[in-house]
Amino acid sequence: MISSSQRDTQRIVSGKEKSSDTSFPENTLRPKKIEDYVGQEKIKKHLLVSISSAKIRKEALEHIIFYGPPWLGKTTLANIIANEMGVNIKSSSGPAIEKQSDLVSILSNLEEGDILFIDEIHRLKPQIEEILYTGMEDFSVDIMVGTGTWAQWVKLPLKKFTLIGATTKLSCLSSPLRDRFWNILKLDFYSDQEIGKILQKNSQTINLNLDDIIVKMLAKRARGTPRIANRILKIIRDYHTIGKNIYEQKELENILYDIGIDSLGLDYLDRKYLQTLLEKFAGWPVGLGTIAAAIGEEESTLEDVVEPYLLQVGFIERSPRGRKITFSGKEHINQ
Image (tube, rainbow, N blue to C red; front, side, top):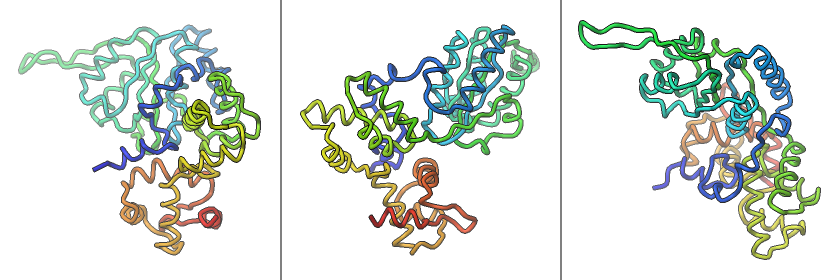
């Protein structure tokens, strides 16, 4: 039986990395400098000031947390910061750090000014979070040495480092941990114009000459997410390779329709969600658990993967009484 998380990785409009993505030169498409990064203008301006100041002071950058919907560039920004600062970056994730000793080992191996990037930082266990408190503030951790009556706590000094956390659920971070970040920065979905710039640049990298009309078509279907835009670009490159005329608008529309992406980037799961609200519940507010049961998906998948974009385009509303399809959502699903 295929789990909902596995089904999500099968969706073209999923931002989760697929094994097929590795055949596409995505690493070469990712920007290495802030000036080459498209979108998130407020964040870029803030980071440029912070990085310049840290370089002048010759100190480690203050701790940063990026939050917002998934797959909008948190990891890319962390790597850009490391590149701009000229330091090494060590990457991990909340679920991967299972024991306190795992985190102590990571922290003790960081060099002066290095960056520790923790994805899904909201999923750190409470006892592991506690180590970060002193690590972030005092650049030291307390470790137990010896056993039995000879055991004693020893303070292990750390080299000054920068912690960059990424989360889709800022509210799930404990207050003590959240308060230790100097920079709390929210990433938003990209505009169609910003996605268009990314597509135009990356299409040239893979030798596709897309005109403005085609770029706009693809940008509208990318759900404001660069990774999805690059995946669609890969797909149409494959169709171009086997002889399809992707430069003809009608032909391209047929290709996108065949792979299940509509005019605004919604796929079968998005439409199933909207149809369930409209047809099974007649447009009345309904709880997430009820929707998940009706669709046969996990609540977390709907909340983290499906709903953010439907909220962004104004097709659903969240209220104390539950989820409700909007007039715009009804119009789109009835087209």
